[in-house]
Image 1 (spheres, helix red, strand yellow):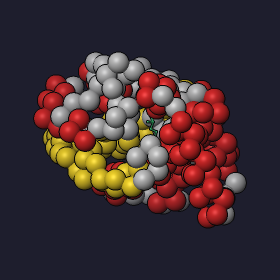
Image 2: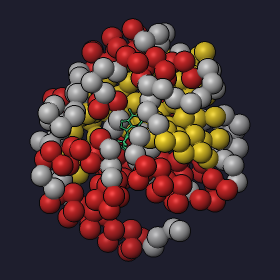
Image 3: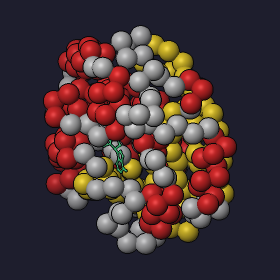
Length: 235
Ligand SMILES: C[S@@+](CC[C@H](N)C(=O)[O-])C[C@H]1O[C@@H](n2cnc3c(N)ncnc32)[C@H](O)[C@@H]1O
């Protein structure tokens, strides 16, 4: 059910308080695989943080009616609602490793799920349950930097994308990483040039990896500017 702006603001403030109270390793663990009530709060915090990346990634995809789009690591499923609002004929599929996120994304997007316009799958990007060449476009925000060896996942992304299809991904730029984005709990940050090499090695033909400045939140909710790496890659 849609929330009023006041309720939405209160929920974001509560999420910020919860996220800020977590030790750095727990922040990282919950971002990599959100779990339980804390995971729901972390996902809410992320909506404030990743919204601008998701919006600009979707604009770059330029979706048109009838196209099937795939999101990797959809979190609580808020970007799915934006995709579905962009055209009444777009079909959305998402895949995420977190059972908590799958349940929350299905709950939030219940009318679209019931109408057959959105499906949310539990699973990992390196072994996706989709046929070859089944999507016109793929996107993700804040996901690919959790992959110690991105190659199997990038190859599976390439496999499910139609020839000529576009893939857009945002991830943390190591130059302005937040303090909790540490290697030990699971972040694998790479500069744009390294992502460029990895996407090409996985079979993508046209690749552009660049640093983009974004408005973000510190873990205490104060605004900040950070770079993220944005990879645009065509199959
Ligand atoms: C930091 S959250 C980002 C959520 C959402 N994209 C957003 O911008 O708010 C990362 C999400 O990616 C999911 N994830 C991590 N590794 C994954 C993988 N290998 N395959 C699919 N999902 C993954 C996590 O469960 C989590 O929901």
